[in-house]
Structures are given as structure tokens and as C-alpha cells.
Image 1 (cartoon, rainbow, N blue to C red):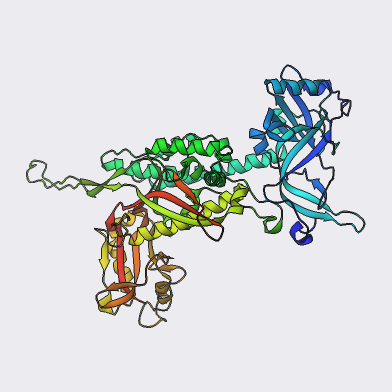
Image 2 (image 1 turned 120 degrees about the horizontal axis):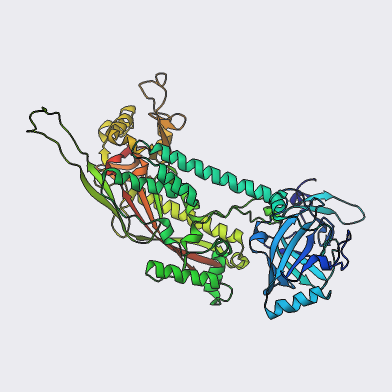
Length: 621
């Protein structure tokens, strides 16, 4: 195999992302290798054994195409889970389903297809048994191909090294005669199918992801073991297949219950509307927006019904349409790249909106506690003072000075965040996973930036959450008396102010790029030769230093202007709640042909322990 197709033939039109290619072939009624036509059909079970693909070259507009059948070249999960049997590639003319599928050692793709019991399916099945329907076709997506050979006198040959069958059809135009009903060896048993190369790879990948999930859950459980016995909780989450982030939220709730009153916290599952894995995979935000613009919901029935279900769940109507939490939190690990232009060989991970937003938000990356999928306002208890004891005389219990713990609660109530991103109408019409990924990523970037700004400097008025700066109970330092210049002593004083919250974890500094630059130049002591500088290798005073320009550099304090903010804190004490359902609205009113996409997400921010944060907001830079 040679260089990628994009570099080999830059001027040739190639298959586009989401473009479906097809191969047709004529059924050999006598089969081969001595297998009869009748042996390929089980009339009682209404099944037919057929070969649907091979490495036979097929001429395309760009040259000869060879479908590679080696291990790892074919994605079978989609057609295994929900492979349709169609007539003439018509998605509305469903006559059955793909029951089993495998790639044999002879490099042919085989399947068992089962016919339905509708009148239409009966008609086609009878024609197949009578030998009238004699042509089969497979529809597939090309994700990656390479130039295999070139010829001066004929077309070049390209080998498709990553492709995905999506449906099998009975058609009437023969082309590839190497894949047929009853072709070659019978389909392997189910046990053998599980060991086929492509299935084995997918199984190992899924197993590795699950092992990582289990390892993450156990790690979190080990860290909480000094507060309570997490054994049962760990086992419960591992057995139920729930994620490590959900387990972390459950551990936080359980930590409260060790010494504090019990509290009812909604589970992210409460925000789900019950979409199946297949429905979640089929859901398309771009299709939803296209239906909003055109008013034609005939192709967006799933998206419309899902929005209505979320509205019932949340008890309110959307501005446009709700995207269910099932979709927002679903991680799609299927590559959506196609062949052509700059998409060749690129593995686009659609990801989930929640995970994308976490990656875009600096406070999320620093370890704040995310509470996604909420359906109602919540109140989380916290312990303000601890129980105490005293030494007494065994014979005299008088004068004991024990005190009981006191408790309060931190509340989160939804506040609406409005997001905007611009997309082209042409892109929206594609309704492909790539477009959905772009929309999710753009919205997540805006949401992450807005959440950071609210968490850091939110005013707590005008529909904004209250951020760390200005929150009651947060420790503050004023360094204007020192000329506004940050020193080693200031860093140590900030750490000292938080000593009671060391167990909360995730201790780190957050500031803007101007302060970062200054810290790299300020010596720890009078000269740089003694102890180096305030910031070295990404750490100050032994703690990580993160940068976000959501930390302002234009503050005014007294007579000082253009002052910068720095926060030191135990970031797990920062709570970010998100209520289930992203409300999206396609606004067509734009003169330059772009589409304005507006989205609304209910969010709130609170400090579980305000004393776990320290703020300096008069740094001169």
C-alpha cells in the first residue's frame, strides 16, 4: 500500500463524507463448492445465507476500488446491531434484517438475513426461493482508502482500508458476481463469529474501555476509604456499568451522609428519557435544526418526540427543541470521517456534549464537581462545625464541654445560559455525524468559556450565578500595600489560609496570562540565584498553576486600575450543576447566508465550602 489517496490524486473527485457506495452482484443459483441453492435457504426460519462482499475490484469514477477484508479493515458493529434488509436500497422498503455477519478466512463477507412476515416480505422471500430474485447489493461507507497501484494504460487501483457496511438489498442490476447467496463455505457458528477478526478487535476495545472504567471507579473508592467503606458502592457501580464520573458524584453524596443529615440528590439517570443505544446513535442535532427551519418533521420524528419527552420531564416548553440528556451524555466512539479532501485518514470523535464541555472548561479540568443531568433544584448539606470532646474524671461527669456539629446547606437552582454559534445552511443539510460533532464542539466551547467566567467572577445578580470572587466566606488578601507585586510570602499565606481544607483535594492556583508571565520573572527571594522563580515547571509553592483569561486583568481596587485576579482553592468544592436538556433554536435571520444557532442551558454554580478558596484581586501587572 502506498501513500494516502489525498496526496496521490489531489484533483480527482473522491467519495465524500456520508456518501453511500454500493456493490451489486448476481446470485449463482447453483452456488459453488458443491453447495446447492436450497441449502442456502431455511424456509421455516425464513433465513437466507449469502456472501455480500469480496475483494473483487469494481470500477469507480476514480479508478478500480478493492474492499480490503483483512483484520481491522471492516466496521461490523453497526450492521450487526441494526442491519436492515431492503429492496433496491429503499430505506422505506424494509423486508427483513441481518441476523449474523462475519468475514471468512477466504476474505469474503457473509451474512444470514431473515425475512419479515409482512405481505411485502413474503412476496420477496417467495421470489428468492423460486430463484426469481437473483441479485444482491451491499451499501457501505468508505472511511479511508489508499492508492495501491497506478497504470499508464488503465485506471489506478485503490484499496479501501476502512469501510463500513450499513445495509443489504435485493436489487436488479448485476456487477460483482463474486459474492452471492449460498456462496462458498457455510456461515461460521456464533462462537466462531465472535472470534472473527473485526469482532475480536471491537470486543477488545470495549473490554479495555470497561477495564479503564472499573479502574477509575476503584481509584476513586480507594481515595474515599478513610471516610467510609466504599466496597458496596464500588461493586454496585461496576456491576451496573455506570461511569466513573457518576460514581464520583455518588461518593461526594455518601461523604456527606457519614456525619451529616441524609440528602436526596437526583441521579443523572433521572434526566434520561429512555432512548435506546440505537436511538441515541440515530439522533441528529443537524436533522433537528433542518426540520425547525423547513417546518418539515417527516425525517425528524425521533428528534421531535424526544424533545416532547424532555419537555414533560422538565415541566416546561423549549424556546426551540430540547436535545435529551441521553444524547448529550452519550459517547460515540465511531469514526465519522469520510474519504475526500482534508478528511482522509482523520478520525473524528463525535464525543458527548458533556465531555466536550468539560474539556473546554478550565474549572472542570481543575477538578470542580460537575453535577450534570439534574431535573430539579437541589440542596446539598454541609457540615459547618465538627463534633468535639473533652477529658473528664471517671468519677465526675460534670463540667464536660462537648459540642455538637452544626450543619447548613448549599442550594443550586437553574439559571439560563444562552449560547450562540454560526453554521452554514449547506453544512446543515448534510445531517451527518461530522456536522453534529462540529455543532456540539462549538456549543461546548462557548458553554465552557461562559461557565468559567461565571465560576470565577459571576456577580450573583442579573440572572448570573455567584462566582468565587465576591462570594461570602471566601478568604481574601490585599497586596496593594506591597505595591501590588506578588511575592513568595503571598503564595504561602494563601496556602496557609486553606489548611483546614487540604483534605478536599485539587489544590491549585488559577490566574491570567499576564500574572503567569510575571511569576516566571519574579524571584522567590531577593535574587533569582536563591530558590529560583515563583513559577517553575507549571507549579508555584508545590501546587499546579492554571491559566485562563476568564480571570480578569482590568479590575479596579481603590486608586489602582488594571489589576489582575488570582484564586487559590480546593477546586472540588466548586459545584457546577446542569439541568437536563439543551434547548436549541435555529434562527434563519442572517443577511450573509449563515444560520445563527442559539442554545439555552440551565446552569448554576455554588461553593460547597467557601473557605476552601482564597482570592487576591489587586495584582499589578
